[in-house]
Length: 452
Image (tube, rainbow, N blue to C red; front, side, top):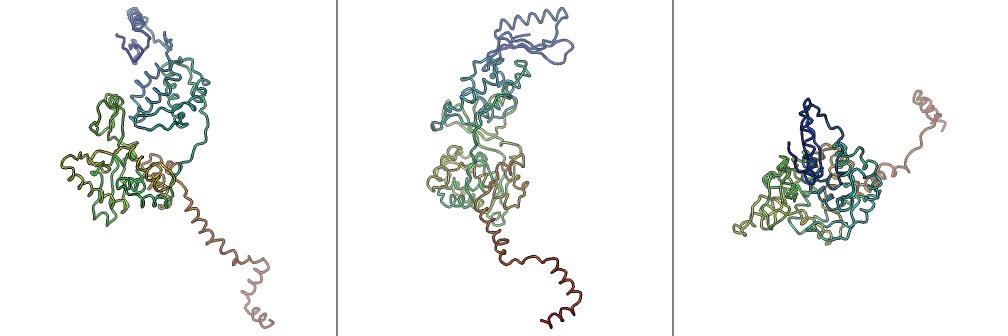
């Protein structure tokens, strides 16, 4: 038996005769671990070794120490690369500096309440490549930190570090959520007509026409596009969505590769030395995100035009074009990152004076229009959007446009209110009885007419 160092702790793992499982204990120093090994070996020889039960840790562990262990033993086996990277960022920049020195066993719900309130006035950490916006930590980030701590403390209970989860009783400050701004169909059409950048125009058309995420658009390769002049004429063009473009932390990619959990298909060559991240093509967000989408003819025609322009670009570069088969490619053939797409989209909004929206809102617009045009066929729309749950289509991505509400009001006026002046009052019971009598005895009608 040998003590192994795990981050800032020393771990020993051993078996007890009669038990199928292994038992583990953790110590602050190697000396303490070796002393415990000697005790275990003596107890084994004397036949007195018993399960440790709830082992009292000789050194109270801090939140920082525990989170290192939690990431190594839990995160690496359960998280995808995106969540892994963002969780590391939140732990290193928001959790450790503020509450990392607290003892895990001493953390209370009140401590977490105070911590969440403090985060509201804490400056947001600026990521490399992003401009300073002088913003504080957003409410959505605080909610995600709370989710992370809940999961971590639940695992701490399983590992016998604590007996209850303080995050379950903590309260994240309530702040009214802003409703996502989404263009109307008329505004989206104005943006497309005003767009002079062919790459940005194709991205907008794919976002609206195919309900694609930005990463899916930027990760699309020509080998996944089924389009010809004939398919455009017959309205049968389609494309396969089976990957997305992402920039990932290299350390995270290495850990996931070691654990046989990597979903990366391709890593692009580095443009700079000593870069901590890599640009990759990887499996999309969920399994349901792998899908085939039919192309509206306008989108298909624009893609054909882009493909021909790229072929001409390759000839002008005389072998310097880096051909990665990317649909949305820079002039030298390299992929276009999401931050560049967001920048171009923002410039288009500024030039046109349209309401400020993010690129992802085009997916909301697309989903809403398809729901209306399909007569509420949620499953058909879900097939295009790639959502794993159908309620996401109706509850999150569906929006009601003022233009449609005005049209409904007009239809109500035509079919109902316009007829109010000509509507006849209902007959009384006496009138109904007279009409029945006249129908039964036509001679009475003739007599009444003669009298009149």
